[in-house]
Length: 85
Image 1 (cartoon, rainbow, N blue to C red):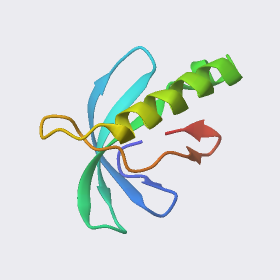
Image 2 (cartoon, helix red, strand yellow):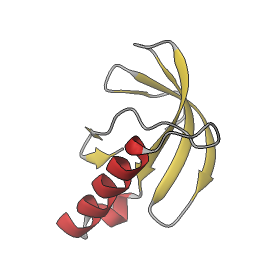
Image 3 (cartoon, rainbow, N blue to C red):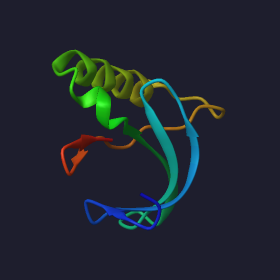
């Protein structure tokens, strides 16, 4: 994915790590002109259906409510080529 632009907004620059649900990439938000971390679900998880997407959206909503200098702020979620981010 490195070098790709997601939804005309996020340009993927480097892989930061891989976890149980997905891979996290360093990216540039081309709309807001800021550096972001972009979590992309593993493709095989998408086959698990609604339960996986529900967990992913719940994680986003919880993170979006947190406000602490040592926790990254969540800005957006969506899909790109049928893959949730």
